[in-house]
Length: 81
Picture 1 (cartoon, helix red, strand yellow):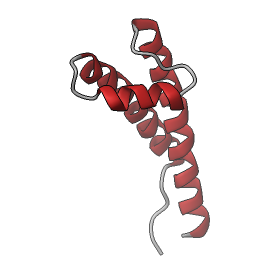
Picture 2 (cartoon, rainbow, N blue to C red; picture 1 turned 30 degrees about the horizontal axis):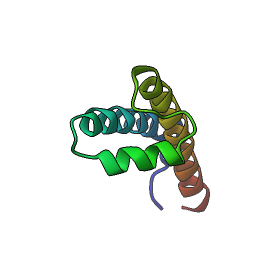
Picture 3 (cartoon, one colour; picture 1 turned 180 degrees about the vertical axis):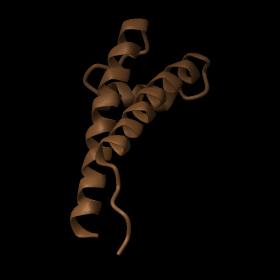
């Protein structure tokens, strides 16, 4: 069979990716590139707004969601692989 995934490592990678996406969305949205995506993120995420504090809280929220998603994917892969 295949190798096992490192559950915590994939969770951490998902956390970094989620936080980076929130930051990138704010930077590009304020530059006028992704205004629609930024407004959708405000509707879908509880703590995200395109302000400095809202970006930080959105990054934390993205990190938590990313960690849980990566952890769940690795755990399920290891369980059924």
